[in-house]
Amino acid sequence: MKTKEGTGFVELTLVNDNGMSVEIINFGARIKSIKFPVQGKATEMALGYTSAQEYLNDDFYLGATCGRVCNRISGGKFELDGNHYQLTQNDGENCLHGGIDNFSLRFWQIDSETVSESSVTLCLISPNGDQGFPGTLNLSVTYQLSEDNTLSIKYSGTTNSATPVNLTNHAYFNLGDKDCQSLYLQMMSSAFLETNIENIPTGNIVEVAQTDYNFREPVSIGYRQHNTEDESLKTKNGYDHCFILDNTPFEQPKAILTSFKNQVRLSVYTDQPAMQLYTGFYLSGQFSAYQGLCLEAQNYTDAENNKHFPSNLLKANQQYQRKIIYKFESIT
Ligand code: BGC
Image (cartoon, rainbow, N blue to C red; front, top):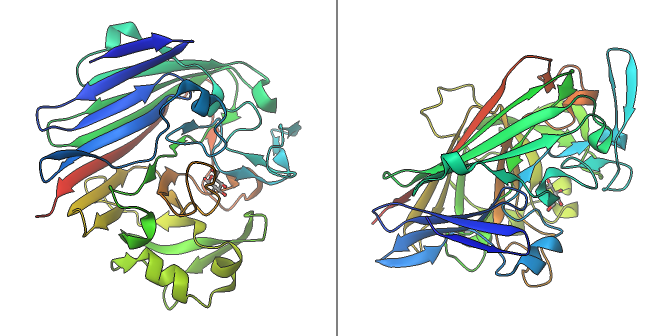
């Protein structure tokens, strides 16, 4: 494990014996880099910046831990136990990925006792009232790189008063291709959340069968995006939708992304019930649209305002625990 310090930024490199390495930074508890060998050459699988300044200016949540509640809360408002809460609004009227000063913009504390060649835990205390959310939330995220080329992410948290919690990782994957449109995606999902123009769920859950949201068999992202007649996909310039995952055992992948060019496969495992597929249309500046895609394992969007969705509520003295695993394989 290497440590690089400066300007408050700490960068740690996790390594295994198979030539895979993962860089984690304390700013936003982010994944900065995932390198996997392609024909013996360490190849970047995800988007990252090189300098601290670029992370400080980042608008795209590159590799970030998003929360307290990732994705959107409609109007930045919700009601809990008869109390009305107004959150900070950073997406028009809505609250996106936790609000204006969300967790992707905080310096997380590295728990020095957990640091090893292959693992690190970062901690954050989010005080009562943070971005308008109730309750003091104590969080940790553990990244572990294993010899079987899996990067596992474990979230855990407790609160002293009931609060919604929904954490995810916002890595943009391209598996070493020039953009995500050349990749093939398979997702174990039979339904997705219909959304309005502001990406807020209407409350309707729509079956994927006979639609361009059907990823049950591997699909070329670029082909789909270029050929779709679906109005929502056309207006949003691609996918930015929440898919409900099949309730299968954890050991079965929920999404599989493949680069046939680099002969690399990424399998995503999670205990989260949904996954936001975002194909990165809004990337700009040093990145361009579609340069990477996010497979954000999380709960249903805007569960706070849709009582028929699974709840995000964490009560005092309950334990929040969620897992995401990214497994990389060579398919040669
Ligand atoms: C959202 C997009 C948003 C992006 C910000 C994604 O998780 O679904 O709508 O633009 O994050 O980078």
